Amino acid sequence: MSNKNLVEHLAIVATVVGLIKIGVTFKNIHRKKEVRSYNVSSTSLGLATSGIWLWYDLSKGLKLGAATAGATICLDLYILHLLLQEHRRKDKRG
Image (cartoon, rainbow, N blue to C red; front, side, top):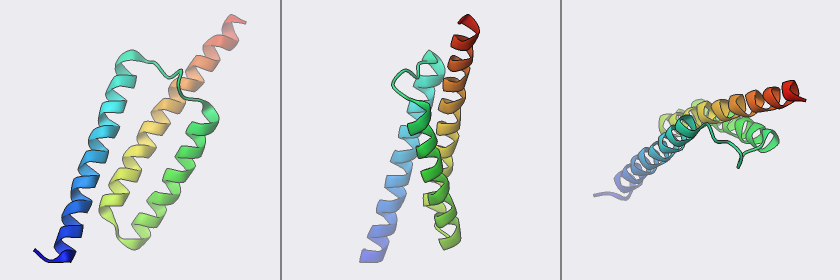
C-alpha cells in the first residue's frame, strides 16, 4: 500500500470515528435534554469555527472534512437551540 493510500484510508477512518462520536453525543443530548455542561458563548464560537472549516473544506474539495464540519454544525445548532430554550424558560419563570 502506498503512503498516499494509507493517508486516505486513515482520513476515512478518522472521519467515520468523528461522525460516530458526533452521533453518540447528539443521541445522549437528545435523550436527556441535558446541556448544563455547555454555554451559549462557547457553543457559538464552536459553531463559527466549524463554519469556517466547512467553507475551507468545500473550497479545497475536501468532502470528508466537510462532512465532519457539517455534522458538527448541526450538533452545535441543536445544543444552542436547547440552551436558548432553557434561557427562555428561566426568563419566563422570573
